[in-house]
Length: 89
Image (cartoon, rainbow, N blue to C red; front, side, top):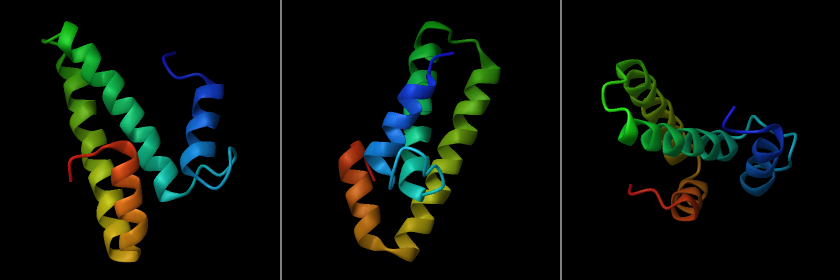
């Protein structure tokens, strides 16, 4: 597996409230971003892997939905996570 348990705990500790707090929007967005980056690298080498391409598009949509939720809920948290992860929008 590309993302170990320790790596996930590190992501949630850095972006969430703690290493066991997996439910915050920031933690989920950070995890989705890591998965998106991994799948993007995979697709650079395997251009015809359409199943991976479809799952990548779905992940981007899920992340976008969480970012939209954060925009409505708390704009400061949204701006912080976008800046921290280096997202374009």
